[in-house]
Length: 359
Image (cartoon, rainbow, N blue to C red; front, top):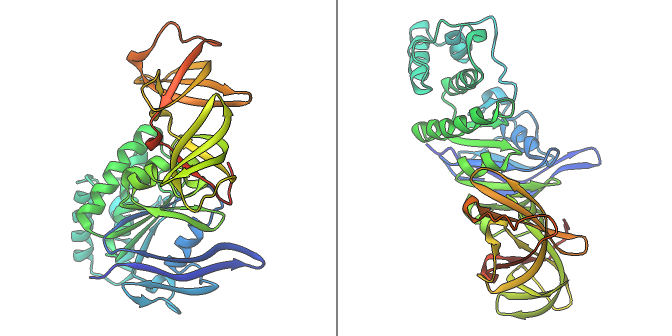
């Protein structure tokens, strides 16, 4: 069964405000797809257009190749899990799961079979008679998933469902959600502002800012090959070093950055000499000493111990500092504030981007 979702040039306006700019995007059948971005970027608005809670101002939403124009939310082949889960506290676990089936007139026997099967799927066998108040946060999360899956949707929509959980539980639920998606083969469309969630679970991620899709890619490409300044700065930790383009040779771009020496990285997009741009280099790609082909001096500002790694914050010029992530075993008693160090990185690990949005 085709459970793809196509946002066919959709736009969402609220009066004079454009919440979602023209978007043409196809989410493949059986894909775990995430929309990632800060609050107010339009990602939940997109989810509401897919679910039928909002009608696009322009364009068409297609599910399984079929236009959803005029199809109300309760008639679409979708199911949604909200941020607050919206479980019914006066119903048992089984009654919560079976609710959608009861509304559809499914017999009690078939409802019971479905709830038993889904409780097994979410690893809560035998919990059907429990009250919602007797469940932990993670168990409530799994019951919300089971209830959404009970109506056998083609597409499951998830609106920041893990945001209320503590860190360890969120991390565990990421694994469980991905496992459930693989077992069911249903198309999952996930909304989050948490990059860790998006990168860990998704087959592809769409990064959004101010109602516009900035980049759509698999997590590794998104992290290693950002296409805009916003993506480079929003996805993962990144150091941005501003400069003026002095030379372009092939795909390698050299910046005059006003520090001791020029810096080179891989150019992204349309670039020209004399243009202002940012060179982005990840903290884990900066090394101590002359190990890379880009070498510069710095002064330590502070040292932060983070268990498996150390983060050095170091000044490289007036008002400009970089974060450097190194393994704990590289620690030295010489790492003290105001100490001078030499840093380097490989030019191939850096990207140079000039765009409309500046960080």
